[in-house]
Structures are given as structure tokens and as C-alpha cells.
Length: 428
Image 1 (spheres, rainbow, N blue to C red):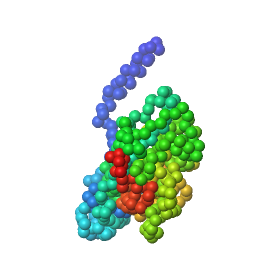
Image 2 (cartoon, helix red, strand yellow):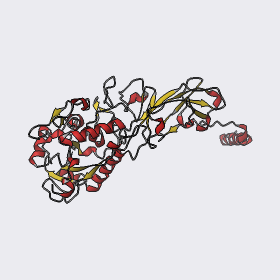
Image 3 (cartoon, rainbow, N blue to C red):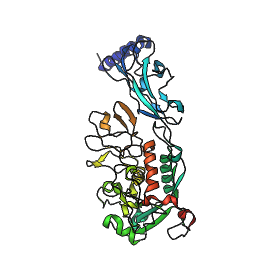
């Protein structure tokens, strides 16, 4: 028989078989549908053990469901209508819980979640309701900031031109949203009422052509003494009692090894006014009384930050085993006396704020705690604190952190710029 005839016959038979099978003869399974009868246990993993009673902060009680084979059911397959949240006090609770009820302040709420129509219930978890910021921390503080932008002629001519003011303005907006908590509902996050504003006048009282910006373009950038020679020689260290200095320095060729840890990380306060009580000084900093000549080191006078990092979007947890370059907001926290929440050792270290999560790259945690979400003490949270590692979003300041920052501003002479309006009016 002709081979072509055989091929045709086979094709006809195949078509007949296919046409003979109706779709109704098949059973299709939707992988997004979970049979409730397969659920064996529920575990509550809240994102904190505290909640600020200001009506804005929000606690996520996140339920995690497991099958009888002890496999975790993905969150997107869990339907809220299956679950019922109950409190031992009888209070109505939902997964996303917030309150402004002052009568709850200081109380501990204990919560369980139950699978409706079954006897399946989680172990209880507890969290504490804490008071909003005291009124003494809610007065507005305006800090005049000057961005000193140092670039090379090669940067300007070959790599996109001068770093424009509109980009700096966006950066300032982002920092202010961080300080106000505008982009977060973190359970312990607050509005610090600290605001950064562009200086309008320079250190000599002359009006700035570009508000908040001081520029220097040179053929080569001198890195000697951690940039001190460069900045001093060009009068770019403006008085700390009138300006918050932020130096954005180009290092396109990576001449400074490990810029973040050798330069930026050390930009923090060290001095208190004479007579400041030792008992009230925030822990974790070796405090000294203000120098008699009122002269401060470069790293005490502002923030030195690598210009190329400003627009970096994808950050790693570490670089060659050391902490990677963080966002500018993190170093604003350092400038205001905050300490890191993340330890890169094998155990956590405290930042002396009792409402932040202190964590480390735990091998037992999801992604070793090196991704966006972290797990500590059976709590599961998104890293959004100002002092979290480089992978975090850095859009929230906790209540305790705010109180610490405000103390720094009140008691550190190198953080006194907000007490003067010179940068806004050009005269004393």
C-alpha cells in the first residue's frame, strides 16, 4: 500500500478519535481551589507583637494553613471567608486590625483564628496595645537641608549631565514620606513630625540659585581623608548649627572600597550639650560633651553618600560578605542617632528600641531573612523600617525610634540646624 495512503488513513482515525471524545468526558482541576477538608492546622503569624492605638497603624494577623501532609497552603489560595477571628476579651477582630480606642492602651489582646464550620482552631497569639506619641513629640521640626553635589566633568559630559534639581526634589519627598509614615501602615509606625526642607540661602546669607543645592564639578575627585580635604578646600562643610549637610559624591569608578561601610555608616552624632544628664542619653553611642571650639569632624557634620546609589533600585543584602550600600533614608536614620535593626552576624544585636525587630540572617528563616519579608519569634513581617537592611523599603519609623531621634535633635549640638532659620531667611 502506498505510504501516503497509510499516513492519510492514520490521520483520519486520529481525527475521528479526537472528535469522538467530548470535553464532558474529562475532569479538569483548578489548582487555585483548595478542598477545605484537606486542611489540618492553622498558625497565626502576626507582623508584630505591638500596635499603636492611633487609628492609622495596622496589625496583620496573617493565618498560615497546612494540609494533613504538613504542606503550607499558599496565601493566595486561602479565602478569608473560611476564617473567624476571636479574642479572649470578646472583642470583634479581623485579620487587619487597627484601633484608636484609648481604653485599650496598655492592655494585651489574645487572639485565635478558627476554621468556620469545623473544630479546627489555631494556638493563641498575643499583642500589646501601646499609646500614640506623646504630644511633646508631635510639634513640627523643620530641618534645613543642603545637598552638596560633587561630580566630575566626565560625569557631566558623558554620563547624563548634572544631577538635576527635580531628581533631588523627588529624593527629598521620599525622605519626608519616610519620616511621616505616609506610605506605611506599620503596626508601630508613627509620624515623626520631622520634616526636611531645602535651604534657601547659603552659609554666607546669599540666596541660592537652586534651593537646597550646592554644586562642585571637578576633573578629579580627591578621596584623601575620606573626602575631608576636598570638602574643606572647597568650603562645602556648612555650619551644622544652620544646615543639615548631605554630600552626594560621585564615585563612578569605585575608587573608594566599600563606600557604605567605610564612609556613610560612620556619619552619626557623638556630642551632647554640657550638663546633659548621663542617665537620659540614648544607649549604643559613646557620647562626649561638646567640644569647646565647637568644631566637629566631617562624619559628625552631615551624611556622605555615593551619588550613584541615589537611583539604585535593586539592592543586595550583602556585597562580598559585608552589608551592601543602603538607601539614603537609612543614613538619615544614622545621622539622627538610630542604630541598625539587622545584624550580619549569627545572632541579633539590639538597636535599643523596644518596638523594632532585631534580626539576623537566620538559616532557619525563610530565605535566611535576606529577602523582603522576615521571620522573627513566629512573627512574619515586611522589612520597611528605616534602619532595616538594604533589601527593605525604608518607609517607616517606629514610636521608640521617633522618641530617640527627637532626643538627639534636642540635645546634640551637631544636630541643632532646626533651631535656626538662617538657612531660610539668610540672616540671624
